[in-house]
Length: 263
Image 1 (tube, rainbow, N blue to C red):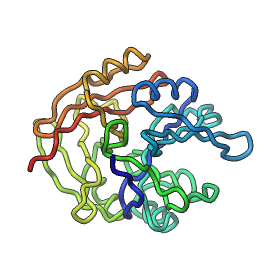
Image 2 (spheres, helix red, strand yellow):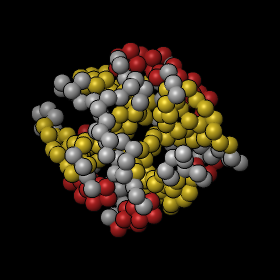
Image 3 (cartoon, rainbow, N blue to C red):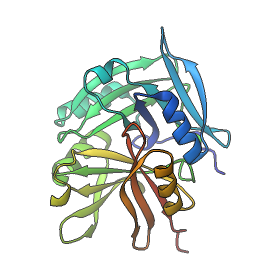
Image 4 (spheres, rainbow, N blue to C red):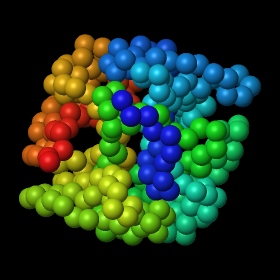
């Protein structure tokens, strides 16, 4: 196991689950990924849960509460590490995005803001202080990839270049969509999928992938635990195998088993 202690500007460093039933979510993900929940105070009458895996923090959880009353559904939201949350929030707004919340301090652990890109896909930014981000990434049970689904890849590429300095590299074109890799310098950051006509009813979104040793087995376990497999396991040629799932409160995530890198 490799412990992650620092993240560069522009790297995904954390992911949060907003849910309507924290107790059910703890049971579901604890069984599926082996996460251990640690509750901690987060202000008057508020609790924030950190999930641990093999001794390292991997994700967080909070109750939607009032946001649920405003129609915000359960969801996962990934965080991009940034050097200056206020500056990046300004860049996002100037590039056609929208700042939904913040920037604001999260106790003494960091400074954060929630953003919409121009098409409406939601993500967050994190300026680290005491909390640097996930201690484990890219392993079974931990965040291993993030992927944008959008109807306008050109506009998205311009927005993320202006906001984070990412470059966009087209790597695959099929009959009805394309796949792009976002990079920060030489480092692969995330993927971008052009929304095909068959997914026209799916809103633009960022999807977080969690690593698993057995994609098919994990998908079966999702169903056994009361979740739903939205997209059954399938192969990505020369990359691995993945499935898109929902937990019992309908928060969407993906599981993936990646092939070892070729030598």
